[in-house]
Length: 364
Image (cartoon, rainbow, N blue to C red):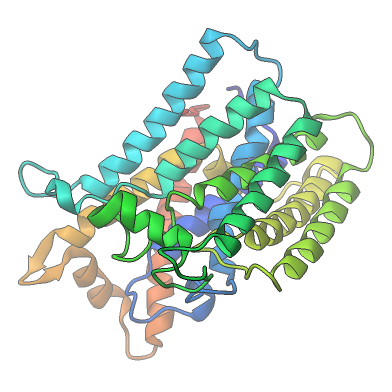
């Protein structure tokens, strides 16, 4: 895609999200991380918990720009399916890869769900829904997914026990993850990118689609509508949270509304300053956002290698680099850990800048 055809505010938002994804996934040490850069233990949310739903939201927004005028035919379906399979394949590769021959973990130790897998699945279903239904029908589907998920989680007994939203065997989402994935999950008792919670994650992308439709429309004062929608979603999400707690691991319906609310507010502000007022800012995020998936995959893959390669007994290359360069007597360990992550982010932002300036946009 030509640089002039990029949507600046969408690229900035996407880039901000991918930069934060890289940052929160790459502290110098997980033993010393400032609280805002950690996920909430279970219920509630931190700034870090906003990052992944923001990305699914902007995936939905981007679907509008990519497929609004595409014909609904076999070619379009094929393109959607191929892209989804690429994302899922990259995610499975990351989960299975090891540096030792034959370079893949034993089958029973491979995690099936994951971040890229969820992006692929959500992209597939959100795209198919978008090209086949008008926005009013999509609103109904979105409501059905969120309300239906709440009813399943809150009212369906599990193994004869009353359902719960806690991390327990009678949590329906956790129960299904253990039943379906077994040892192929993130944890023995649940997976944050699990099977049932994929349903509300599709709703996160659908809410992004609605925002994309607004951005593509000819209506005036789009930023006011986006920000107003955002505050309304926050109210709905917090009220819903009284009955279905805000929870990233479960991707609860209240969590979907709250995160989409913040996404609309932030994107609305970026749109106002960058597209309405024409103020040039956030270029580093724009560069990263133009090749977001590529940068995320590279950061995850290289960080995994650095964690697996041993340079001094049981010390990994990452651990050696962190302890040698970043751990200093005059710095708190949390600060050293954050500086390590920021250093990695700067490398990938610079790579994004090079790709952007060379007009290279790699579509995965």
